[in-house]
Amino acid sequence: MRVFSLTLGPLGENAYLVAGDEEVVLIDPGDEPERILALVEETGLRPQAILLTHAHFDHVGAVAPLVAAWGLPVYLHPLDLPLYQRAAEVAAAFGLSLPSPPLPVAPLEEGMRLYGLSVWHLPGHSPGHVAFLALEEDPPQLFSGDLLFRGSIGRYDLPGADPEALFRSLKRLLRLPPETRVYPGHGPPTTLGLEARTNPFLTGLEWET
Image (tube, rainbow, N blue to C red; front, top):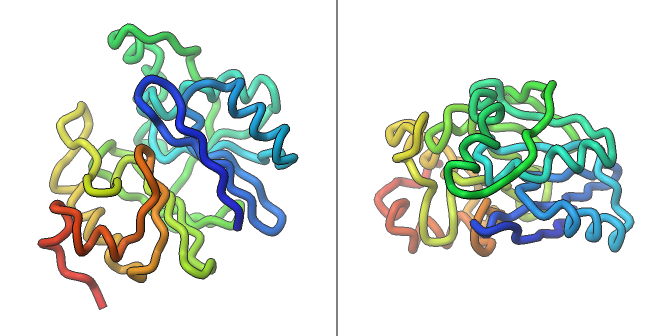
């Protein structure tokens, strides 16, 4: 699996172009569609779909122009659909402008497998937050959205967030091998083992065996 990343927009959101043996997807295109288009042209990897870990505005800002350019399906967990529909409105409240992401979206659900990735529903940062996992890779790959970052975790003080659910979701990640490589929604990549040892939000959680 090849992973290409771009850090986009004023909030420094990470978008990922992910290529398996036959599948290519775009995860969380948050802003600056022109940079995403340039990356696709540079790599020659045309995405087949847009996968969203969640629907906060900084993760969906480039969806509309990319759908217009490529006619891609967009996948989102239904519990985040209200956030998706209000993304432009919420961005405007922060003084930012983005085109309203288009409907319809295809529903993601727990246990789904698509484009070579497994879907885990991991709420807490938002009701419909998911992660995408490539469990057959060596090491396994985890696209964690805004659940887990290097040295930190996702906010749980936003509308629709739930701190208890978020920590249940974090504990579920510890079912994965320590060498699992984590590609977060913000900040640099990391591994689950490193976070379990050093992340102050995870050091009190026990590894599941």
